[in-house]
Image 1 (tube, one colour):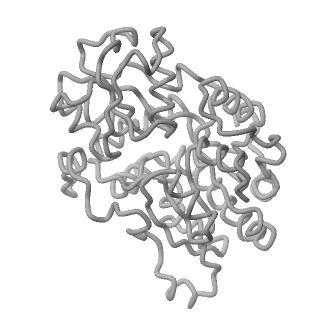
Image 2 (image 1 turned 90 degrees about the horizontal axis):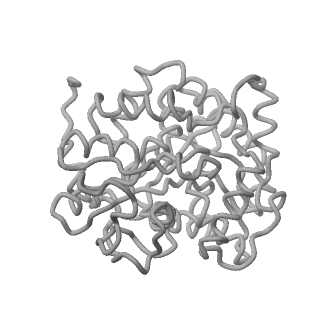
Length: 347
């Protein structure tokens, strides 16, 4: 148990006041960053409490990788990826991090955004249910927790249902706040929830009647998960800043794979979970699934497959732009040129 006290139950049950969309900046104060002469990048994360899958930018800040490349970050937590997309489109932030779905749908609708990198390109979520649910088919007629139809967790729920030959018409959707899924599972309001890996580990430890029904990375191994994205207008004027950020992030990913103890410490502070929970999640995410890309993380075939999956599920709003329009690989490719490509790795 870590010497730093953590309140696991509070993380599982309470939506903290800092979760308000657009609040809770975790990076440097703008004035301090400006005094150092570094460009200030306003970065938005898609969860009210930072998840392990989005914690790379915090590791990059604390270990000095952002500063190494002349970047100061002002980091804000939002309610969802949709909120982050809106903030980028409206110029409230410079760079957004989100699962890919709201980014693709915004681009399909004509929003001026483009993907430039990947915080994590492999799925890091699981379907958690009571232990009496043994297969996805057992979800028939059950209440399942979602935020809203078409949002990331609902999309992942559909993929689980497909494994049991079910559709959303065969279950009951129950709206649940992003930070209240575990509480809703425990009190019986819902019978399934899509949780981040660290949330799933914590829930299984805290409540013996819960288990992981399915890991989404096993169901859709070719699904692209996380994106860094910007407005195309911003990118045209700030390619150097984007390249610096992605160089720092890639260096951070490589550091995380080789430095478990420090990574666990920083991520535990960011997520609010105890070190032992994050240590177990680390082994799943970095040793087993390897969700953080070591090179660009922008595999066009993986992204194309994900867009096709969105289309098959009926959650693609309009026609997605071609991959070479949806994704600008320039900044990430230049970052790898600086750092050197790691051969023999998956990404």
